[in-house]
Image 1 (cartoon, one colour):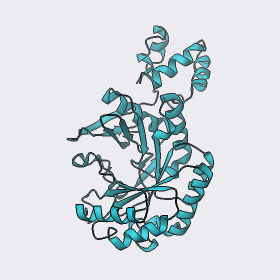
Image 2 (image 1 turned 90 degrees about the vertical axis):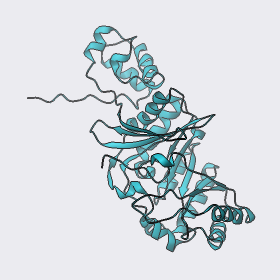
Image 3 (image 1 turned 180 degrees about the vertical axis):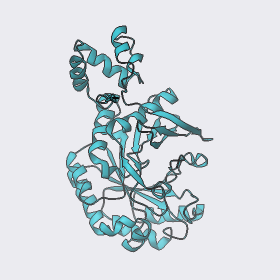
Image 4 (image 1 turned 45 degrees about the vertical axis):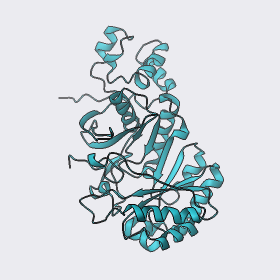
Length: 342
């Protein structure tokens, strides 16, 4: 018995590439623009959905997989944040989060199945790493959330499962598709990393207009290694030096994510240490009160500690804000992403 080989996935292709594909199928070139519109603007899940295509051709293509996932499970939090488990073509499960506000809809996308970084406070890393996601699998997450909310996605953050800079080739492809084909401005896209040697400067030289966020979480090397095991390969002074070069190359500031862990990294002295690291830096600090998980014995700091840490940074002239995560009760908040199917 001969297994039918799936042709190339269409999702993730530009209008020029889609036009080449329809011509290879013996169709006129204008069907490439039609296919492009139905994939990225109308969210077609199957080629048979594309009613402007000839019925006979749709019938021929009925088994063709264009690259869309299926919603395996969905949870809705009280604040209307929606957490999705999406089943991929190989039946692996990833997580995606849709975060609505009155004026925007943000999607937190995954870039890998699992995560190899093993950060001590993060649920995703506890489940291990399986593989990288393709550009199509990243773009599909945005289209899926857009379809489910029946609302245009305005912002995308690469802060879900995985380390985006370890899958930089596919992440950059996805950024370009989300920008040029889905129609989301680059400045509304955020790429987050815990820091991968050489990759920050590789991203910088692409000169994208995206927001770049570095998960710092500690004001010194010793504590950072305790929280982020991979930090031993990327000393804090070197990481910060590369971030300064990023600012020089791109002309864009760096955002620093700092999860506040009660009694671990939230003291006034540590705030002063952090301020010294960032003096004279075109940057912004996002303080994120920790979201508890069962697998790690860390505590969320009280409101007084959070405010004191922020105030110390402000006194040191560091741009700072506190970001309270959405979807906490649905296990959808920052650091809680985990494949329930495991």
